[in-house]
Length: 114
Length: 113
Figure 1: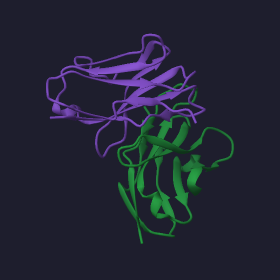
Figure 2: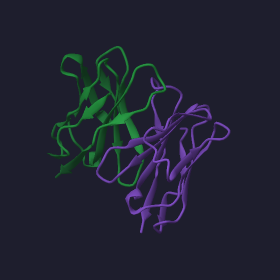
Figure 3: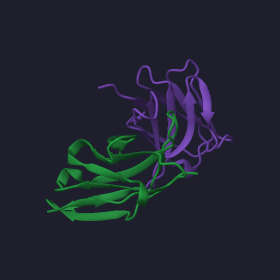
Figure 4: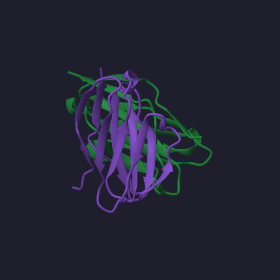
């Protein structure tokens, strides 16, 4: 069974600082990997995804993530945090093959301070 | 941009009452998912439909929850009777296939009192 671990339930950064949110997965076969963002009382918005090809994936709002098979990781980064980035971030995986359910991590709440 | 529609956005109900949520996926998306998100946790799958057929309902509490997608388009999730522990965000998502991604609706925030 697949699982996702997000290290750090709360991360706080200063505006303009690097954002690094960690995600590790457990799967016998490298899955599809996703990062979603959720604002209070809203649904989930896709930031980026990795399915195949280049392991460095660029997403919306300046975020990017790198798939590292040897480390079973898919960490999310942004060079310079903005106040509007404050939200909850979820890493998720699905089995390859299409049409499969997403399995989510427990989420990381990002706080951006002046 | 196409969206997944959900209603209502918020619902307050008393314990032991019945409650229903509605979801209209993006047109052409054959796969529809209902997730439950308890405060402070990640979403967990309740049920997955492929067209009108249930693909996975292993985590659906079938003694009180039911879900249907009669014509393979929109879907309804029902809880009867509601319990205090059912208070959560209920999210609907749809996809063409897993490669292209999953689109989520804005969710229904349920509070059981």
